[in-house]
Image 1 (cartoon, rainbow, N blue to C red):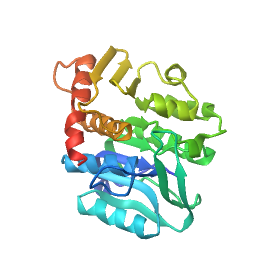
Image 2: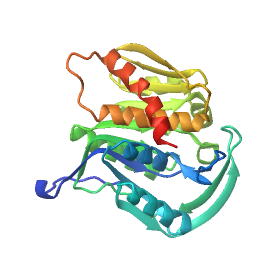
Image 3: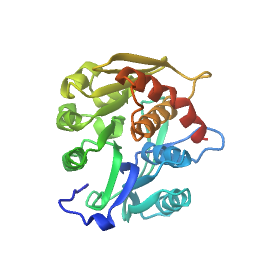
Length: 283
């Protein structure tokens, strides 16, 4: 699980633009030249690092060929992998998910492997990604989010769904975590797999938080500023890849100081316009 800190020696504090934390939910890729297996948490981390953003990654990977090679690849592009742990593999799997009929494959690390954001780490933005319905993991995400908010960090929740993790599970367990997020990104496909509607998510969020939804037509951000829309890419790309570009754009822009005189609506127009640059970083 993810654990927090109470006191930190400021001389040893490590500060990032974005800390990416969570569970890698592995998928196959059908894109030419792309890795055969990828996970949103790792993909977004790579996009950010390739744009010159300081990234710290906290996750648990399987102690196998895929896990070890992934950690080496992440470190090679400048991501701090000091909080990436390797755990013994509990199971291998190959499943078909509802999102585009894509096969999922990979290795799951054991549940008792602790996922921890180091006490000395701080950031402008904390991205939480890779949710499952396991109560202990959701509670750990909540603790990490609360600690981040106490430190003045913006919390972005990537609410991606997987039938494997949410079938026959109660989606209401997410309500406490949704309450802690400053920004929630999801899609109608993700929400359908989890068993929630956009209205359900909005009711659980704080009134000053922003909900970002992707669909085939583009992205819509709603908050106290009203509604901001951005059209999807032309030509269209894989929905999962589009969602990753959106998540990366949100984290990258929120890590920057707000421009003088910029309105909340203007800021979100700028954030959504940044999706295209993240697409280039994903290639």
